[in-house]
Length: 115
Picture 1 (cartoon, rainbow, N blue to C red):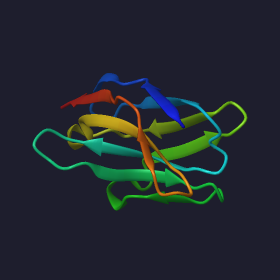
Picture 2 (picture 1 turned 90 degrees about the horizontal axis):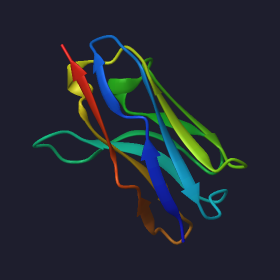
Picture 3 (picture 1 turned 120 degrees about the horizontal axis):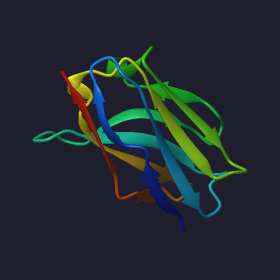
């Protein structure tokens, strides 16, 4: 079992930065983890992943602007978001995917970027 809690969302102006945090309970070392987002009226989409093998992957629309990091000892996942755009406005979710394929999700944190 993994329990995830996101924080760090908020309102920021165009070009600004935010750092999202995801605190995990459970043994996450063997889990692939990532950030997803859902914008109003749109489907949830992948933002970035940090696998258990410590590889990272980013959606094209955030490459060069967002950075995902992870600390298994602290049981934390972060998403540093720079050069934010209004189209980044969404609810951001932390995800953990284990060897069994089961997905765990946090409750989400709202990010709003004003133009």
